[in-house]
Length: 110
Image 1 (tube, rainbow, N blue to C red):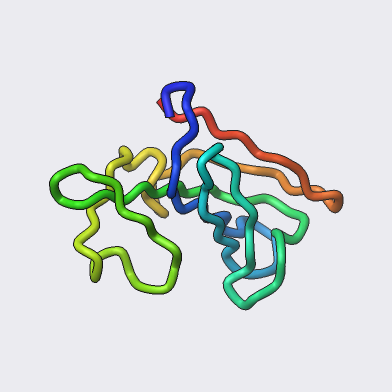
Image 2: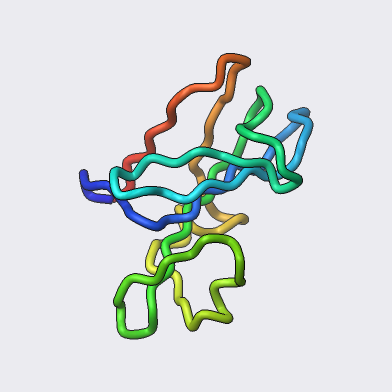
C-alpha cells in the first residue's frame, strides 16, 4: 500500500470467464507476500484468468486485526480499510493471469 507491504491483508483470486475452479485465498505476511490456497484445499491457483479482491480489515478504532480465515471478519469487530476499487467482489478492477508455472503477483495499491 503506497509502496509499502500491506500486512495481514486477504487476497482472493476469483475465477473469471472459462477458468475452471474455485476461489483461491491467501493472507499477506510481514513482507506483503502471500501463498494462495483453493477454498476446497488445493495449493495455488489453477491456470486461468482471475479477478483479484484484496481486503484489509482493522478494528473500529483503526488498529490492526489479524484475519486468518478461521472466523468471519465481522465476528471479530473488523471493518474494511481499503477502497471498494480493491476490496469489493463487484467493483474490483484488479486482475491476474495465472499460467501453468504459477508465479508471483504484485498489486500496487494507492
